[in-house]
Amino acid sequence: MQRVIVLGASNVTLGFPLIVEGLRQSFDEPIQLFSAHGHGRSFGLRSRVLVRRLPAICECGLWDALVTQPTCDSQPLALLTDVGNDLLFGVKPDLLLSWVEESVVRLREMDASVTLVTLPLKRVLRLSAARYHATRMVFFPGPGRDWATMQQMVIDVDAGLREMAARHQCQLVSPRGEWYGIDPIHVRRSRRAVAWSEYLSAWPEIDSVQVGWRSTLRSLPYWRLAPAERDLWGRTRFASQPAWTHDDGSSVWLY
Image 1 (tube, rainbow, N blue to C red):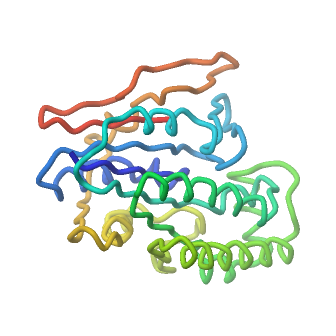
Image 2: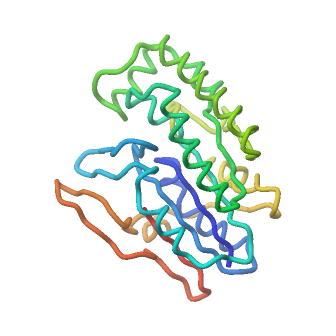
């Protein structure tokens, strides 16, 4: 059994069907995929998008679930991405980096090989102030920081992630500018398979992971999977885990 942990936000959600199938096809043994993600997901805040709220990644049930799992023969593999979301919630770089580091420390204590995905720094810094404010209002409406302040915060977080990766002996992957279009936050649909192949191939303990394109129709079953806890229309709803199992013994656990 190969255990994989993926933490992130909307890019993980959009690419989740590709992640699951790419991992399944790349390992000779069943995979056990634990993931905490979702549109607008925060590492340290309980986040809300429209009528849905999700617990902070640092506080969700994923960590207790991992502790109770039997030890696997293979080293766990972990990937953290979508770190910049919290900046748009108004979180300062030092606090955001402390949340990410808390997750990294927990994963390293489990002897996981950890890959950190940096921010798409060059792509973000090429934005005009008008494009920044338009993007922020679409995805994170409400009062926000001015563009000059946000630029410096993005630079600080990117530098902090790089220092963190070196200190905790993590792999570091940087998104490519050409993966993004008008939307500077989300990888373009046509480039998702390429991006996830690169992210999931960064672990030195394994051979490369090849992620293939998947149609919207074939992706829907994965997007419909329910996490262990979420609030919908003001009511907390729970779902038993694993959220999905396959005949080959693979499973998906969502938090």
